[in-house]
Length: 260
Picture (spheres, rainbow, N blue to C red):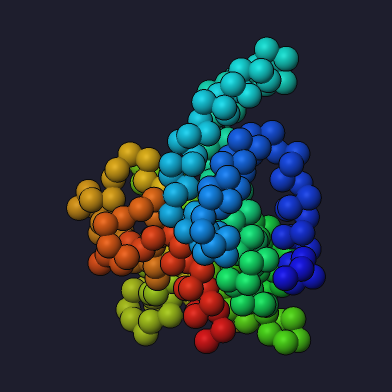
């Protein structure tokens, strides 16, 4: 496999990754984990299930980098910088591992990942629900999409990434529920003047590393019912539970669903 199969966004991401200072200790741990796997191709799949541990293990190194930048006057508020790092590191490492799965042949050609929605033709219509004269858009971090042979958009998956469920998980499922109402013939849709006319209906998925062990909370479990699929970046007791899948399952999911 060569980088000819990558999108411009994906190729640019690999070039820019080395310039993101806090990603070095995280990327190094991911690469080391895969190197110890018996089969590198399988390793790039399985490492997705260990992102919780990898991010935790890299925490001290990232803290030291933040201290160094604080002393150098490159940042003023370490706590604020830390918040930015935590969210962005999770997104960046998923993109990195996803791309490596493409290069390893685990992902079908014609499937791409991006955090830049503006680069996807027609995506504004996919992400916009009209409520009267107002609009509602989903909380989204990454988009995985497939292209037709003529390079037009085929299908897409919107991913909401959260390091914990204390964050804005509810925003995403509420938009998904609104989308279901918009596509239904019901009084609620008419009452609130809800309309939605996407060129293709996206799948809405949720990804977490569950730093605070919240997934067994009954109220949180209820949120998972609204997503097309939910994933966790840590080992779970069974391959598939009734409400969340190991993150490695994302690869099969995109291969199966994006070319339907």
